[in-house]
Image 1 (cartoon, protein in one colour):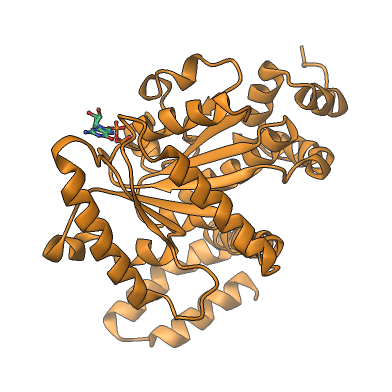
Image 2 (cartoon, helix red, strand yellow):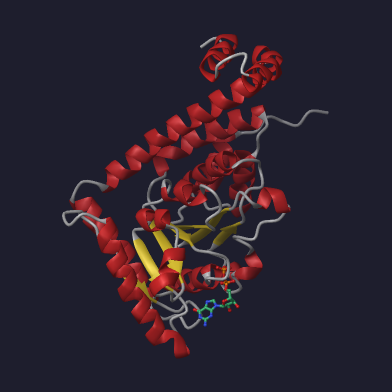
Length: 328
Ligand code: GDP
């Protein structure tokens, strides 16, 4: 017996009305890779898009153990007490390998997970980073349409996941521990270039002085990255997620960042160009997928790879043969 067709209008209305079960169902739909689900998800997103865009989208990254979940729990509670509706998402492509997500796990956010008005969703486990990113971006639309006004997207620096998350949020925050001198070299330079805010976490007890010194050194390192006339210089703050210290400063900086961008006319522009970049990312992903699935290319690849290995064919000529078989 086939199931009744999904009533997309009813689902959209229920999500806007705050239905949690419907929201969860819709997220499962956008995470699905089934063609019919994909089509339904796009219809749903089209209906909800006019009601999206209202949240602060904040990315939070840092190595495992830096204190992300403790901090998100504390920040989430802090914002809920101030009347915000908070959602937490995770982008963790490695979870597809381990079979379980280490991020966005409810047990890691003990207080927030019991709040009725908070929504926590672990990383989708569907395939590649591209797949996870797609589901996460679409989930942001669903959450905003459902009235969540703070969306925290958590990630660890696996592969390209930091770049991916930085490209879907308004403010990208890098959490680190007190490191000075040579240890600073250990921080991936790329992540500092992506960060809008750097926070030296676990600045409590005997680590306070060390954390402050690390913050000063990081400020110096960041000065070398950003030109003098940049409209935003990522501030380095110290905080303690465990003790709830520095939450006001953290959130105040997120708000100030938005204000500065908005005043320069760059806030909406950032979101718009993220959409355009996103469109091209999907085109590239699709082309690669089609290339991999193309029967002509499949037949040819073993043969030309061998010819390139043996020197019978140059790489450039072989590439042309493959593209000819792909017909582009
Ligand atoms: P995550 O892997 O980045 O999510 O890190 P967790 O939030 O799970 O924290 C890792 C460990 O550091 C846990 O044992 C926490 O209790 C501890 N921790 C987290 N935040 C702080 C903090 O602000 N100060 C101190 N001293 N410990 C912390």
